[in-house]
Length: 406
Image 1 (cartoon, rainbow, N blue to C red):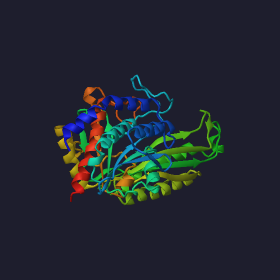
Image 2: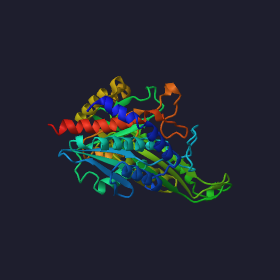
Image 3: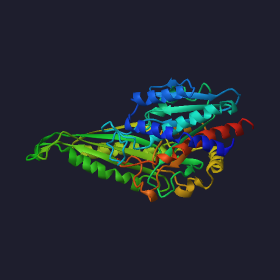
Image 4: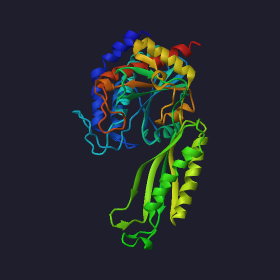
């Protein structure tokens, strides 16, 4: 497959991809509630000659190739946005209050649609099948398991999987493609919610109350003992309380206080995570009891760590170097070989089939893109969209050609 031809075809789609991406950006949707987004993706896939099928609560899948026998490779884009107010200084800002494409999933969706169009033009050359996945609910770690339970990896059976995530705010040139090296590339994540129940009353008579704020504050401080004294220093295990709420008035002791946060590890068997959960529960309940409070500890929305297949990573890095030259690098050059602390629900797929992830730099901090993902002011560089489409399409064509010839 001629790299110059693929890049030229992708470049010719740049204006269309930008239009799609900005339309999605203006109309962000979250979780599984993706009616506008799904309709647009369906419309474009149908226009390109596909027959998209619904998978799970809000996912879409389309197939390309299959005219020649061979293996199947999965290309994935996530579609959901974040429940945050946009503050970016752009003329296509979100028109939906409290929702924003702050993680770049609108970019991913547009790029995979571009790849779908390119692949359709080369359908007769595909040695096997390309399965295109448009996934909901990545931000809440529910979209991938939902689609997996609905048969994502079957009919036809998937042999390898590829995802791309854009990134902004790093001192790396825009348009650079970084391929994750083999091993664990991203941490697991699990949400927690701690509820501390006491007895409210007037602030002037605290002796007549059971103050849940005092108990919750001591619980918050006591939990740090897990990291400093109970986790092997060679293991990675971190938990963060990102939300703490109690009361509505300055002169009233409330009935309850609540904390929400996350647990992250890089243990594929999640033994470290299970230890943290066990000790969090014991400490929270024990400290709460010392302050005469009842405590509930709940865990939910678990996502495992991402495992990158070494052979597939090596293959895709070679393909990207052929396609982009010096603007394709091994992610370890930047990461130092350390797994990222962020999490990605495509990790569920990585525990089922050989998987690789790529990062496409869509805005360098050297060029004024100073905010990163999930920040209300984050901006992404639209000019790299065609490069993402080319990366998706070329990696699928090359991998199928190489491995079906084995």
